Length: 329
Image (cartoon, rainbow, N blue to C red; front, side, top):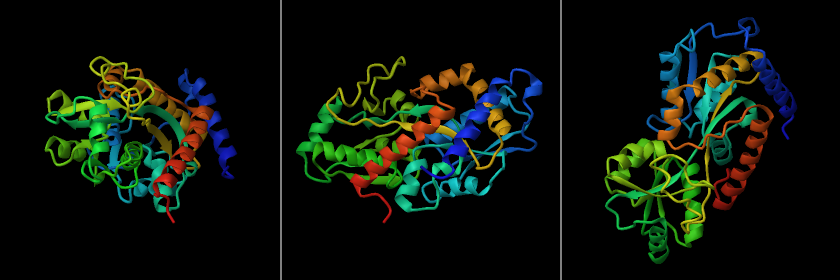
């Protein structure tokens, strides 16, 4: 355990306690005094970017903040640029960051001097799903049909597009390869939007995009979802018919964090402000519609439960990336 883990736990607990007192205006002692920079450690068009800009819109529409929330993409170094920017602004409550699993994968793959414990965890907003997608004109109607085709084909006969190298999409691709016993050609792109376009254009055979990154192309009849990588099928109308990959004969399970962090050294009442803000965001009708459209797993954690989840998932990624040969030397 990192030496600052216990103080960080204490700060999170104090923030949650303060949130419980925030029913009266006097209890909320702090609010932003200038625009808040909302960092996305990924490119435009991907799932994290879409969620951040959606949140920005909800905040503005309902006047949930007196100061503007400004989305800034810092995707350099597989997101390291964004994480290091927040880490370096110790004590600054006017900066928050939305995280995905590159919170774990980037430092493990690159050796960049960053760990999630260097930041202040605020809240898990949801878990994003991964879906195995093919072009709607492909002959594969089920996940098993596609999986069997890969198994019977030559090594690297199939192309899988994904976001970044040694990140979530490539980790899933390695899991897929191991299950199939065959290599596939992994083709990295900057964002999930580009990945979906490549599949629509028939330049690759499949992707493992998040639902929100491919939903419009699916509804437009261009893509076909084969299976979802969660433990349970999606509960939403329109998504219910998509089986889990495990039940469809493709033994893969993986979900991705959509969480909020702040710089190190912020005060409990500053954390409490954002906990309350995201509580109000999650209560809006727009949020509920966004969750359904994007087929999110709506698990939401704060405090000790979030801290423990982060530790377990960091270790899970360390194991997966070691098996894939992705750990920094």
